[in-house]
Structure formats: structure tokens, C-alpha cells
Length: 223
Image (cartoon, rainbow, N blue to C red; front, side, top):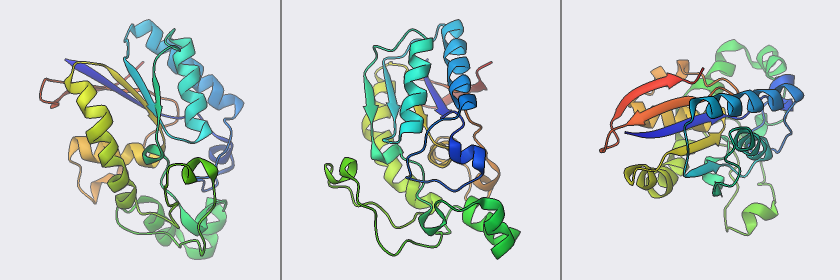
């Protein structure tokens, strides 16, 4: 069997402050750093060895991946960064406190924006400019539903992760709550309605073991 481990970055400043983030770049908190260190220690104790690590182009995920790799004695591994693994883009909600948005629009609308698979949040009027994406010719979205985030993630899974797993190479993916939910939906064939209840905690490694056809044999939280 071959192993895929997925992990959401450690707590970020936006997580701590209950703020919508998306493609905004924010640092880890001291708690987030500790979560990454603990995850790396768990991986070291498990003796799971990876061939590659995949992460987004956002520093909260990159920093988490690097800490995890250092603590698990695998910092030398090839690290692949892709915008396709970036967090879902929350559009005009970016930077807003979730509790304040709830007061303004109500719990039902907030839940729809956050948890629906197909609902698109209020869009930005103009796209951001960022050199890291301009170099790749990537058009920064004005906002995304979870479905849209999944659509950009799928090619990366098909081209970069699945072939390595099929070749028998264990892979580590450190990304974000929404993009990992989108991947879990794909891997486990979860319905559009049921994905709303799936939550991915910060800094907790999830281990999938696949057979030779990439059928899931086991799934567990690394403890």
C-alpha cells in the first residue's frame, strides 16, 4: 500500500482572529508553530517516509510544511508549491471578521457562504496584483465557491500527486481547510450536501492508505 498524508497548516493569525483569509498571506501564530512541530514529531515517531511534499504558494502552509519536515527529519525532500493548492478565495469577505459578518447578514447566509459547495461569496470588484502569480500567468480570482476551488485543484491531483502514489511513493500534502475539504470530497466521493459538515482541523495529520488502484483502504488521524 501507499500513503498520502494531508494536513491543514497550523493556526494562522487570521484563524486566531476569526477572519476570512483566502489568498491573503498571513503568518502562523505561536500556537500554529507548535502545532506544526507536534505534527512533525508524530510523523517522526510513525516512521512514515515521504518522497515529496506538496504545498500552496501561501506562507502559512509553506512554513508549516517546512517545520513538519524539519521535525520529521525529512527537510531535504523535494517541495512542490502550486497556486492550485491555495485556499479558496473568499472574495469581498476577505479580511472581514466572521462574527461581524454574521451580525450583518445572519447565520443562515454566513453558513451558506462558508459551507455550501456551489455558492460563490460576494466578489471583489478588481483582482489583486501579485508577482508570484503574474510569473505563472495565473489570473487571481475575484472569489470562489468550494466547487471552483476543487476544479482548479483536480488537475494538480491528477498530474502531480496521483501518478507519484501509483508509482508507490508516499506523498505529504500541506494545504488549507477548504482545499483539503475539496480533495476529501473527491477522494471519498462525498455528496455536495454532506461536504458542508466536513471540517479539517489545524495541524492534525490525516493518513490515507491506498491500494495499487488508488482505492482507499484505510483512513486515520495520526496520533
